[in-house]
Length: 278
Image 1 (cartoon, rainbow, N blue to C red):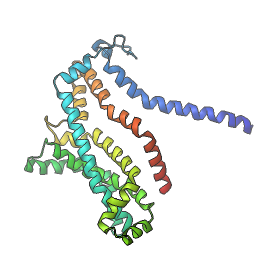
Image 2 (image 1 turned 45 degrees about the horizontal axis):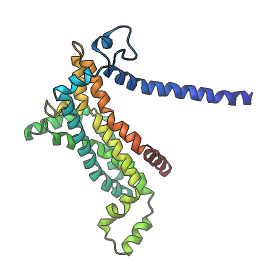
Image 3 (image 1 turned 90 degrees about the vertical axis):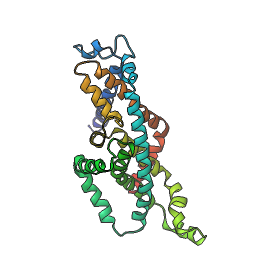
Image 4 (image 1 turned 120 degrees about the vertical axis):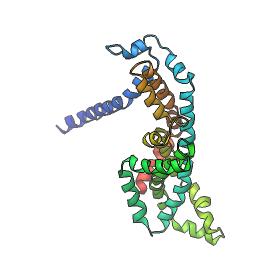
């Protein structure tokens, strides 16, 4: 009986794995397929799984007015700027928390409380503050709150890697004449580069897909990809907006495909090492 159970075990595991993979990839398949469909195929019943006559009309319309191109450009600038600022603040903060015990409770628990709050709790005061400064509908007006929210993820992800670096290495470096202020960036940063890369990718993805803050702090000039997709979907009730939303969504997948292609092995090693360090 044990042999029978062992022989059946892989079947259930593989079946569950197939179900998870299909459930995960089906929305991606449907969006990409819809971006090449005609308006008739998008709204016809029963639904067409694949476009009978693939067309680029949705892409042409989505980017003809420059709204789609502007949304991608805004998202790229905001995501890169927010990621850089979050790393610039988060890495030294993670180093301080790792090496000095004072204030750990506040630095770890208070961010959890803030993240558990609805995004509107942050966005509404920011909207009032930005209105007085004239920062509504500006790129820097989104970079700052994005980085303020994601900096805590940087701290949580990088700190375990810094914890794994023996303090004796720092002591030896200072004995050799390395100034204390150069230790974090000159010595520790190269040793935890894998964790920094993983944190940067994670934060970039969060900034790339952020919706609530962008919805409340932008108007027309700095709309991001999620907002433009929502606008196309709203337009889809009366015209070809659904195809435009699918086209923009397909194009927005490019950064994730690039990350998966170039950094897959790095991410696996990084998260595995982080799990061991914890």
